[in-house]
Image (cartoon, rainbow, N blue to C red):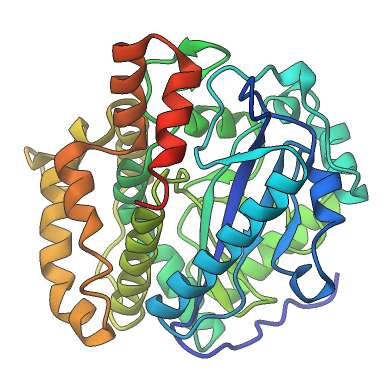
Length: 367
């Protein structure tokens, strides 16, 4: 394997990836229309609307965005264009990290060689991965900053998960979790909150060892909750479920950008225990915003709502200087009314019908 070369990017630029479900407009089950839809994508947008792991979903990828307003404009354009293409193919879109009653045996891998190789390796664990997510790339100037941010952001990752939970149902049942997607990923290798990396040489040595013994092609199949992305010159945050409202997606991206800027400028004096971070992640997945966040100090336990509120307050001046103030407002709504998972649970409890739940959530996406 050749040495990993980190391609520097303009600091704190943004790239966003959304994995979107394609549904039948009547049954609202996931439908295998991905390949058909992708044939309709013009050559100018083929790098921005792409195939994903299964044929019942596609991925939206923004180009490099200069700020959060740029992100909102580009995602809005791509999302509305994708809606048009989906309508032409006889399907509709749904923004959530798990479909409530999709059957894993009815899903098919996209006709991409890499995806079929991955599925052959993962077997049942791979067939269960009918999940969707929000991935956020933030540009950083060099490899050392990338490692510093990756190490420093790990303790904040459960907060981002708690804010975005959208996968309470699986295989026609209530899982009891707010993010059941988070429970499917541990079945895969090279996932979860990573250990402290320390420096670029450590990361490169680890990737070399993994490449010698697995299907890895560079870093593409390292699926950690946060990872350096050498080809793009970014730190990629991958822990989030996919929110079901457009403005909430933008708010989460704005928060992540601000957090990366903060962590790029300050080296942590010490790193929290990975065991505590994993405990916090589990609590976020299980209980959402009502879960308990613990830190290194004995007896210092708070709800995720409290910790997130304090974090937003501590970052408020930085957000204002970035012009992100108005975009961050939806997080206050999330803290008050709950995440997509909370809304899905309430709607299903009211109507007792997953289809009615999906209809209502769809209608509210752009609101």
